[in-house]
Image (cartoon, rainbow, N blue to C red; front, top):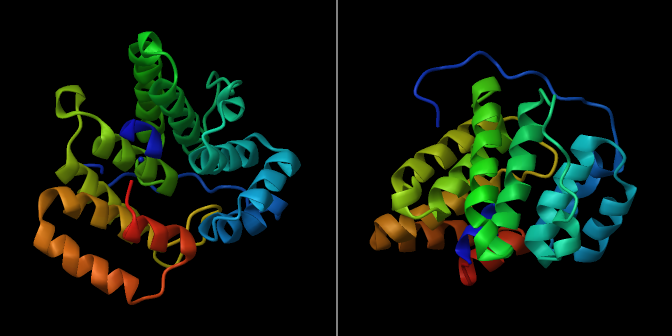
Length: 218
């Protein structure tokens, strides 16, 4: 189901700057983006084994599940109780969205609402955190309109993500990713514009993960 591909996360007013995230070097922080954009499942799986902090575990689980769809990765989703990191909350929300999209249909409403509730908490804390924007944008993109989906709002969210990524290094997030999601939205909104955007992005020799998206979108 399409909803699973992203989530599994734009704010109307300018918020305070989000809390700073840890800058300590770890194998995940140093290498996840490199391996993910190269579609290197073996090394992302290795990082999954090496991850020690909650945030590192969430970062790798979010990427590895999207690459493999292995249910064991989302079998034990960490609790959001007491979590004050907007990034961690966004990632927990995404894992619940993955579970909602791939589990028994009877659980979809419960897991989907749980994902949204957690994402709302993340947005309240720091709506401009890159992962909050990524997960929010993906949610808006994949959800049916009757449940709050809105491709135009998704595009605006990904455009905001692109602005937030300028001059920043975010573990597990390549700057090109926002461009690809903007293009995904354009495919639903304006086919002519989407074709021009696709040509422009392919001309930039994107990393394998994003080239695959552009050549064979989900």
